Length: 386
Image (cartoon, rainbow, N blue to C red; front, top):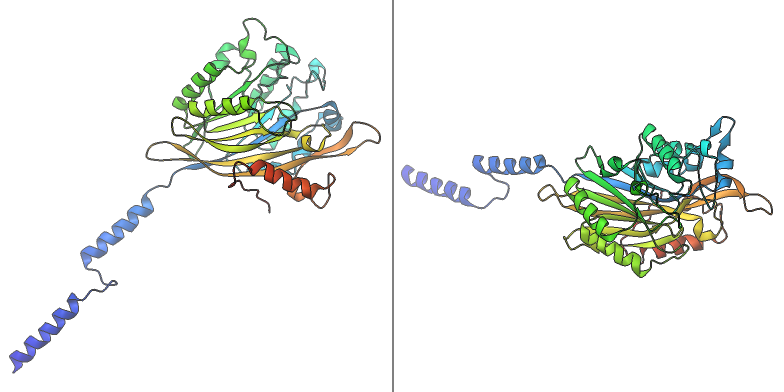
C-alpha cells in the first residue's frame, strides 16, 4: 500500500514538472536568457551627429553701420535669437557671402562687398564651426581681401572652404572629426565671380563649378571621411524654384557620393528633397537656404532658415543615413528709417517666435506658405517650435 501511494505521488510530481510554464526556467535557461539581454545592452548603438546649416550672410552697408561701436563692430546681438539653434547641434555651417577683409581695405556693400572681420566673431560666438566662402562675391575686393579674411578665420578657429590662401591650402581637405566617431568632409563651389577673372595661376582663390572636378573631389572626400557635405552657389536670383541645371548638378553630386547638398545664391528659399545616389547613398538637398542676414527688403528675401539634419553611421558597413530633417524658418527684422532704404536694430528671428509682432504683413499666412513650399518634395520635413 505504501509502495502504491509512493508511485502515485511520484507520477503526479513528474507530470506537474513536465507542464509548460513560461515563467519557469532551468538554471541553463536563465543563464542563456541573461546573457542575451546583457549582449543586447552591451552592443553599441550606431553613432549619430546633427548638422545645422544657414544661408547667405550678406552684409550690406546698413547692417555694418548698425553694428558699429565706439571701438569697432559688434554683430553678436543680431544673432542672439537664433544662436541656440546653431549651438544645439554637433556641427554648424554658414554661407559667408561677403569677404571679411576688415577696415584696412575700406568697408563696402553692394555691388563690391567688403565686411568687418567682426562678422566672423559673431558667427563663431553663435555656434558656427565652418563657413563656405565660394560665391559670386569672393573676388569683389581681390586676392588681398581674401587673404585677410582667411587670416581672421584661422585666428578665431573657424574652418573655411571654397576659397584658399595657397595651392597647398586648397589641397587640404576640410574634415571635422567629431567625438561621436563620425568624420565629416566639407566642399564648396560657385558658378562664377560676377565676371571678375580669377588671377592667373591663382585658381586656389575660389572654387569654380566644374563637374569632373566635383566628382573627383567628392570621391576623395568619401575615402577620407564618413559623410560629405557640399555647398553649391548656383541657381537664379530671386527664383523660388530650382532650375533644371541645379537639379542635374544635385543628382550628379549625389551619384558621386555626397550626403548633404546646401544650395545658395537665389537669396530666397527653394525646396528640399532626398535623392538616391548611384552608390546607394541617401542625399538630402536644399536647393537654396535663402538669406539669413541681409538688408534686402522684399518679403521673401528677408526669410531664410536653419536646416537641421541627423547623420547616422552604420557600425557594420560604415554607410551614412540622413535622417530627421527639420527646418526653422527665420526672418530679418529691423526698424526702417522714414522714406529711406535703410534701417537699424537688425536682428534675425525664428518666424514662429515673431508671429505676434507681425514683422511683415500677413506673416502667419507667409509662414504657412514657407512651410508648404519647403516640404512639397519632402513630406516628412519637420518644423520644430517650442
